Length: 453
Image (cartoon, rainbow, N blue to C red; front, side, top):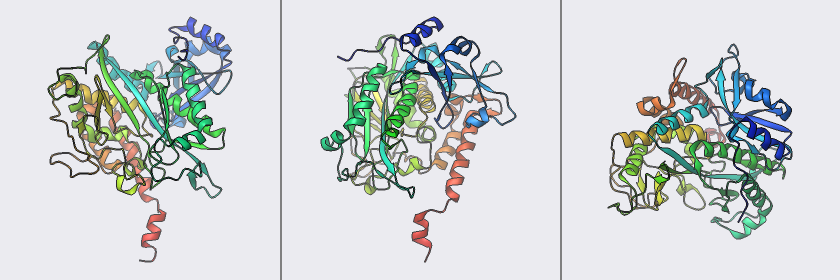
């Protein structure tokens, strides 16, 4: 059995002992912006006391996606001592996640703050949200002309999922990531070649929702570091290749009260071992799915992954097209794979984990509060069979999803207020601008289709 890393520090004194024990000389003082981009400064450990008391200042406008202009005061990153980890792959480096403040007040544009608020509301009811993540990504190499290709030139099979030969050829990278996850104490239990050529997934233990969001950010950072050292790129772009399956970030979600899973019910008449409260959570996800997609599939590229099965070599997308749920059936937005948890499959590799989980928490809590029921599970394969009447299609583009988000009062309230109104409106403005810039770009497809028409 792999030895787990020491428990995370609980206060400043324990943090000081931890960095000394780990031989850490510098701390990567980190937070993420709206886009999920990790932003950081490198702080010498000798400044630890000052760092914990005063934080580090950042120009919020330069960090982007934080609701600031160049005229606004600094956002100040205050470390969460419990988030500290010794960085694998780099001797002498530690990583610590931060909460953002402006002029002494929590900054409501900070994604970590938004998730904290949702978890606080659950805690007031004596409940805790736990989440496990399954991040997928591609290993690619970039040519001099800027084009990309799958890093392994021998990885070209039509159905490469779980391919032992391809996984063995990638052993150096996969084993590096696996050892890093174990060094972090995350209980890595599986590393595999996924459904697309050049695509991989690493599985590790679940944790409370905030900790898992932190882990997703650190995982992406590690995967990119390891790939870069081989002259490769680890990309979490949802769909980098037209003819290959895209990358998801499937989240396994459970709600707990103390040591009891509130989703567990072995007397479930539907035979899925799920409680009425669990079905309420599922119903909330399905009811709010259109707006939730703006948070879980947050880029224009995200929507090229959804429903792409007929265009991929494997003839499958592994991504939902409808607001539906089922048992152990991977064609739905919500899958119930086992007792006591659900899998939310509408999250992709580009998602900001703090915002995605905050939206999931708000939607699920609303379903519970209303005593909602999702109806009976759908048993059929939605990629291969006719879709049952009454299932709601998911938004076809980012623009459609953003319009659904701003119209959804529950998600609007869940994302919270900001100085100029609602974070949902701020987020929507950013994403509408992103869509408009994309829409104005002339693509190779347009040139091929229209140049001589």
